[in-house]
Amino acid sequence: DVNVMKDVTLGFGQALDKCREESQLTEEKMEEFFHFWRDDFKFEHRELGCAIQCMSRHFNLLTDSSRMHHDNTEKFIQSFPNGEVLARQMVELIHSCEKQFDHEDDHCWRILHVAACFKGACVQRGIAPSMELMMTEFIMEAE
Ligand code: BOM
Image (cartoon, rainbow, N blue to C red; front, side):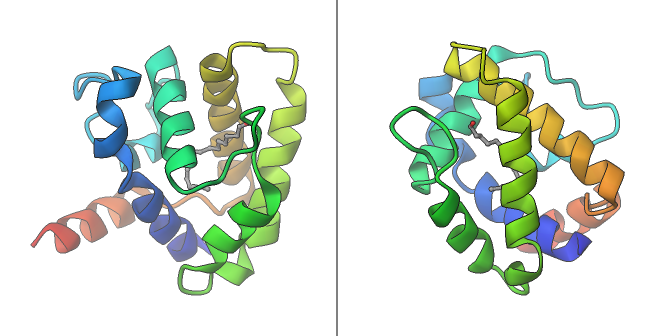
């Protein structure tokens, strides 16, 4: 359900400001986290991988080896309205993307590749939120 993904993204995105400094992710490289879902968004800055690592840590979603912590991630997704509808599927998608890039030793680069893979899988399955939906919600939250 695209609304679930919208809410989870905005929830996860709350940690971006806390992580900008340590990840060196400037506003020029990513203004707001929901831009992740733009059709033309490019996964090219290692800093974004570092930021996602930091944000995931913030919500306690990573293991010591910087892989997804399955139980915590499932619970995190379930904490959003109707989250239980997508929790298992999202954890499985992320895990299958992790397996594809397990050879990458640099955590920031690996996580960036996993994130791009996860987005592609969500688009393919029709569970990616539209930018229109993301923008509307983002503006409403700011008001
Ligand atoms: O191997 C490290 C796992 C890192 C997971 C990266 C997944 C993609 C995160 C970016 C998108 C976030 C949208 C919603 C949050 C899902 C928890």
